[in-house]
Image 1 (cartoon, rainbow, N blue to C red):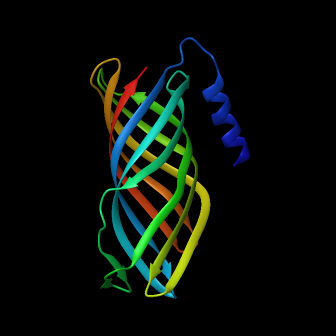
Image 2 (cartoon, rainbow, N blue to C red):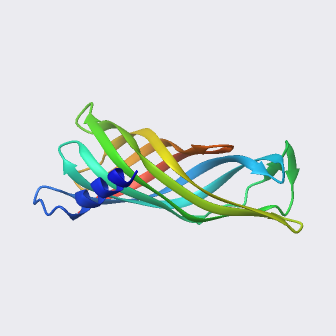
Length: 179
């Protein structure tokens, strides 16, 4: 994982005149599954997130993605039963990625991402609390529509993190701006 992070950091620091930076702002639906107090917990949360990327070679980019804030407090289920007042909070959540993109037409391209993700969070309910701190492999794919040379939108799907009992899947819509 250290090699992936070093590669991405080098990609952001290269001063190539042909390299382009871009920022994507988006909204995502996050399916979260884990264990809590010995039971199975599930929820779907809606978050806003930001992704910063830099082209490092033709059709290749290095990216950093992080969650910004939770948009909704959706129901949380413990062993299939909705639990009121069970609070799930995410702290430091981010991912580093290498992205390969391939144009399939003048305005449409397909892409895949692979890298490393880290999540820290907690759940609290009636005096019981549990925390998570996990990291590992993360990957995803998507389709982008190029509006013009500077602006694009994309739909993407991530297996953000799967480790032990933790499963975080993300489906998102992003608007991007190159500069």
